[in-house]
Image 1: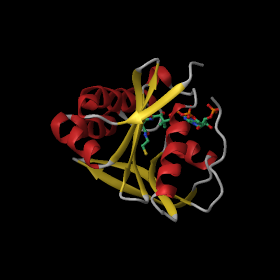
Image 2: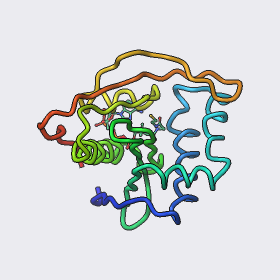
Image 3: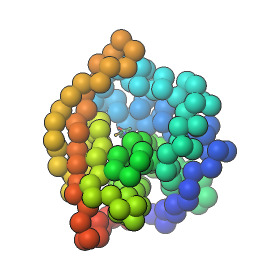
Length: 166
Ligand SMILES: CC(C)(COP(=O)(O)OP(=O)(O)OC[C@H]1O[C@@H](n2cnc3c(N)ncnc32)[C@H](O)[C@@H]1OP(=O)(O)O)[C@@H](O)C(=O)NCCC(=O)NCCS
């Protein structure tokens, strides 16, 4: 695989990140959430300006392959991993796990003692593989749809994150 590179999110990435968000939900989450649930979830990016402003406000990093943005992830505050979305065309190549690794390091550098994520059913195995533990399962309402997710937490000691495959 071509080496994945990371850089901070820039306002000019908003449109590309919104497209990744929609495609990741439409294709990568199709086994776990039905059409109506995915439509309600993807609609969070309908207001692209608001979507971009949220990414700019958070600590957001993008992953690139040969200079092209293929994924992004964000930290809200020091201890919450908020967004994690990978272009389906770049899926199952370790990009998502590499982004979470990078955010773990950033959170640790910010003094975080733990990292929490509201994991979708599709991302739960990734978080488990990176040492996160499931705390509770709950439902979140988006418009008229209810989507299940799992609160997952990882204690951030001084140990480096587990290595990921590249
Ligand atoms: C979940 C998501 C971020 C994974 O990104 P990815 O780059 O494909 O994941 P990786 O290649 O880094 O996967 C690392 C490991 O996580 C696990 N994993 C990832 N996706 C998985 C899936 N769909 N089913 C089962 N295990 C999965 C596997 O153990 C995988 O290792 P392997 O490929 O050697 O088996 C991506 O599918 C996505 O954007 N999904 C839709 C949006 C979403 O649910 N985001 C999370 C919101 S909290």
